[in-house]
Image 1 (tube, rainbow, N blue to C red):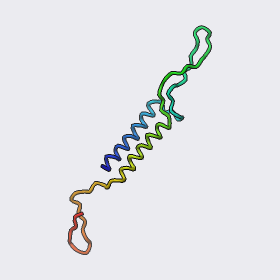
Image 2 (image 1 turned 180 degrees about the horizontal axis):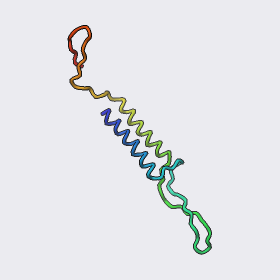
Image 3 (image 1 turned 30 degrees about the horizontal axis):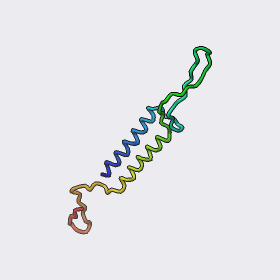
Image 4 (image 1 turned 90 degrees about the vertical axis):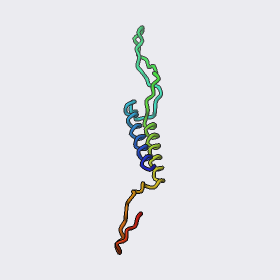
Length: 99
């Protein structure tokens, strides 16, 4: 369970980073519309129109990394996988202690 949570945390962090880079990698806040310059055909004046488009910002990346950190932190609540057949030898005698 511990290893599964750690791998899930790594997957979430890598997927969020890759998607953030692929979708625009905005260093500011997330935008849901972006300005697009337009030129009026009749007058020739420039104007700004807004196009609906989702561009994830650094806040999106931070939230995803915070979630990945929470998963990694939750993995610390579980013990490591025991190695079956592991034996520890006592120094004073030849007795084998199974742990």
